[in-house]
Image: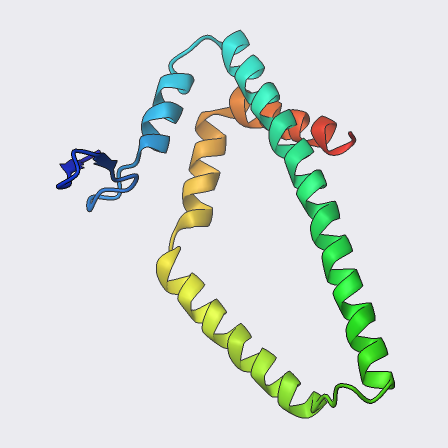
Length: 138
């Protein structure tokens, strides 16, 4: 991690350095050196929190998106809004292609890195997955 000081004497921490090392890797390296029981406890607890938050945020996002779609449909039906569906479909396809291209460029090898991590940290990854599923039920 590199540290910079700006003119107001605030310390700015860069999460990702130019070499690709990040503070997350340091934390994971610390966890993977612990005992199996500690890895299971840390993985389960963090998985539970992540699952719980995903469900809560997902519900909020679903409610917001569903309400927006309903309001848009009512506005279109009443004549307040005219939607050019062919233009919308063309723009969505274009955005999809751009996002896919950028994702492939920026996240090359992510799947391979995840596979390697899961192979090397079976207890941590497995307990995280279990905790995530438990958290998702709440």
